[in-house]
Image 1: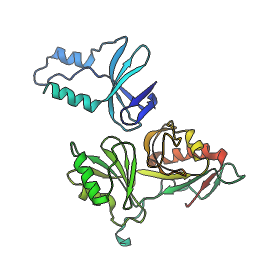
Image 2: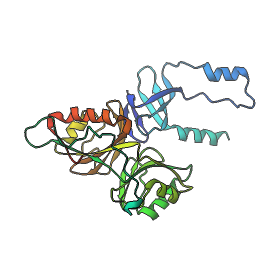
Image 3: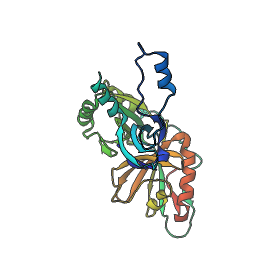
Image 4: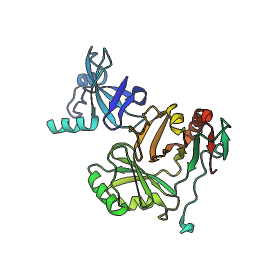
Length: 94
Length: 205
């Protein structure tokens, strides 16, 4: 599997570290219930097909990336800088 | 200014990098290697939202444009090499006089960037010779062909499980590689084995 880093270009997956699901969002610490924390901590979908995941180009530029990957074929559909994703999320819901 | 200079740290390759010939003995050497000992090494990390102001300050002080992609610039005895988004490696030439280099940079870039002295953290090698690209191709999983990687291009990648920062300084070609000093001996082992069939000439010492 090769991942096109937004900063470095296409590299082998051995240069990257996998974190996991990029769709989960940390609950609001001031109001979240125990059930919401449980879901955030432990419950994950296991989609067959397109999935958004956090990867770090740890043996390269060290940037965090949001990689959209097809879990059946390992085809990489898109790669974004995680920083840009977080900033646009912040802008959408301040 | 010699008395103001800090002594260079002991080479991580002391004992390994002894001048002479390794591998194939017949004919001229295919790969030449020497250790690079900059008078200062520092990492520059832009503070949040300060990249443009940092670039302006670098242009004013060093007379060069901060590379915003994997490239190297060299001006007034200081080389700046892209090391990730918002991060650069700064190398002072051996005869650079503004010592100590990292502290001087920190003062100049105060408020715009964080500066960390890496003088004891990295080990640098300069590689050249007619077969250097063939030797590097055994470990560097990136395309070093001139149409893909040329002078002042830079990359950070994984060689024999070791993270290596590589950049090209001349079209001949001449490359420089930086690795963590704790892994320098392992990288050297890989290099000696990979360049053996071309004949490795170790220069300096």
